[in-house]
Each structure stands twice: as structure tokens, then as C-alpha cells.
Image (cartoon, rainbow, N blue to C red; front, side, top):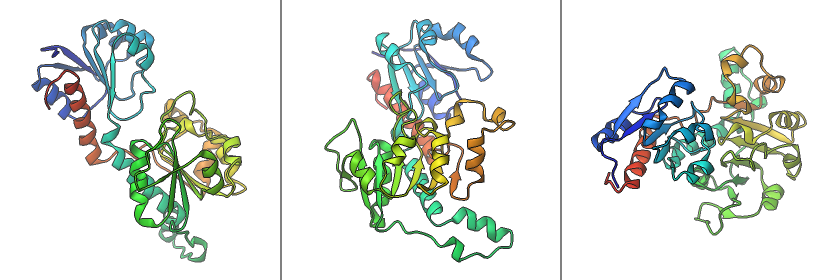
Length: 319
């Protein structure tokens, strides 16, 4: 069924392709960048669709007022800002577009790993300050290492594909998938990852189950010191436990594109940074980026196209 001339509320800034294509297929798209939650609550009952990133939480209160809503389109992968269970109870279809930025995330994770293991960020700073330190920046090769991937969905599988030419042993564990070995990874257990991994890369959604999944207990189970990469969600890793594991070398180094503190205004944090975050900032074996792993020129377009395709296919409209 096509909802001709029905209205779609775009809550966050999106690629212009989204309103252009939806409008071309009979929808009316509204975007009110200055509206906060209360203003949006007052008008949400007028819309059959919502397109969102993460500015507003679509919780039970919000969705209960969305009496005409047929779909929510999340640009990106994570649905943690949407009460998916309640949405399904109301017959609201929740769509996302993890296929759109999986390549960007995979390349970013690989870039962070190479920079971390070869001290590229630190060496660059040193040369710029007039220091020429070679022995202190002797790197470590990926070849011959065992790389454990937890979560073998879109980004986990794309990361494994990027590693294929490095002659590493890529193993993976996904609690909710089996039989997915694709020539780029060997499907295994968590215990084998704990026993064998030199490098751990996280590719899981943020759920109650994965919140602070990487804590002191989990890190203590690794037989060898590990490099840690997190391009999933910040709260998958307990920062305080990571900082403690970095000090004795249990974690050799960490590459973090996401931070536990992202739920808060980072501008506010800048005036009163948590001690654990200060420790990450000061550590020479930690690389930090501001949640940009999936943030490329190409993924910006691809995320839009994937979501448009899903919205239109939902109502049997050819794209």
C-alpha cells in the first residue's frame, strides 16, 4: 500500500537525496531543525513516517503520540534510541541502513589498527616537534597475528574482508549467528578468542546485553595482551576498566572511535572531563576519533540510498 501525499517528519539533518526521493514518490517531507522534543511531540500525530539519526529518543511516550506512524527510518545501524519493542507492538516498522556505512567503518577500523600498531600518530607528533625517534617507534606487524572479531554482521564481515591480504588468522564469534564462515573468517567460540587473539575488534549493537560487555572480567580472560578496537558503541566498553588494563599492558593499545561518554553533551564534558577520559587522552598507546568511522563522503550517499530503498520497498514502490 502506498501512502500518497502522506507526511514524513525528518528529525535530523540528512542527505538531500532522502527528501528529494520521498517527495518524488508522493510523500510530503517536513524538517524543523529548531524544534526540540516538546515541539516534535505536539506534531508527531500528523506523520506516517519518521527519519532520524539520534537527536531525539523515540521512546514509548513519543511513539504513543504517533498515532498515524507506519515506519521509522534510522540513518545508520544502531536502533538503541528507538523503543523497537513498543514500536512493533504498535505495528510500526523500524528500518535502518547498516549496509550503507559498513565499508567506511571497516576501513576506519583497519586504519586505526595500522596507526596504533605502528605508532603513526605519536611518530607524526614527534617529528613535527623536532624529535627523530626510531627505536622507540618500532612497529608490530599484522601478519601472523590472530584477530578476534566479536559480532559478524555488516561491519564485522567487512572488516574481516579488509584483513584478508594481511595473512592474519581472522576468527570471529557472533552469539546470534552460525554457519556464516565466508572465506574471510573462521567461525569460533568466545573461549578460543580469549585463548588465541592478539587483536580484538568489536562490532556489536548497543543492547542491555552488550552494555559494558568489555569490562575487567572479560579482559582478564585473554591469555595474551591484546590490542583493542572499538568502532561499535562507546558503552560496550567500561572505560575505567580499560584504563586499568592499559597500565600493566594487559591491553597493549586501544583504538576508540566511540566513547562511553557520548550520551552526554561533549561540550559540557570539556569543562569537567572524567579522570578516566583524561587518562585515555594522555596515553600514548590510545587513538581516539569522534565517532567518524562510518562518516565518509561515500557512506553519506549510500546510507541515504539504502534507507530510501527500504522505505519505498516497504510499501511496494520500485526504487
